[in-house]
Amino acid sequence: MTRPALPRIVTVLGLMAVCLGAATTDNSCSIRDFLKGNGNNDNQSFVTQLALINANQQETDTFDFGERITMQLTVRNTSSDNQSFVTQLALINANQQETDTFDFGERITMQLTVRNTSSDNTAEVQFPTTRTSDFVVVDPNSNAVLWKWSTSQPAFAATPTTLTFQPGETKTFTVTWNQVGDNGAAVNPGTYEARGVLVYDDFDLSPLESNNLGSSPTQFTISRP
View 1 (spheres, rainbow, N blue to C red):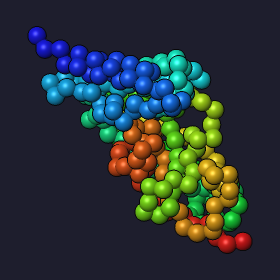
View 2 (cartoon, rainbow, N blue to C red):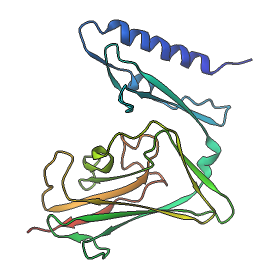
View 3 (cartoon, one colour):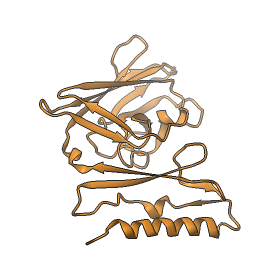
View 4 (cartoon, rainbow, N blue to C red):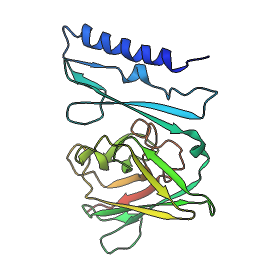
């Protein structure tokens, strides 16, 4: 009988021991890079993921020395990977008109629609936290994120969440951006790209990665005042 999960469990426990025991001169440690990977087995139809959560109920890869670390394991049935969605992002101005050109400082509404293309089957998308959707603005043809919606939101609860789509159902997710970047400063006039997604694996690392849970990057322009 094979036990494919055992080496990974041993690795996790060993890393935790090193992390807690070796931090004599540093106040924090990081182990996510060592855990990177989905932990699935070629002969199984599941993907396992480990989320590390701090005392403030936030998922992170850095912890204070001696801080309690919550480890949350999620197991996903990969048969859902064959589900097909169509995702589209609309950018809407202050006059409620879809456009690709905005005045400097104008509030931009981003409206993501996600449709289950199956006319017969229900589709489910699972998330490790209550964050189900997200939006980013980047420099054109770049992964350099200027603004991410979730960055300014309160911490998302570490509660596994499932979105269920009935056959042919479309769900809509909407946020508004005031043209202020994550650095707290207004972005300059110019051309940018926006994307809306249902949060897929590694979205935070690769926000423009090709995935049917994310819209194509939508280019838009902020005009000079």
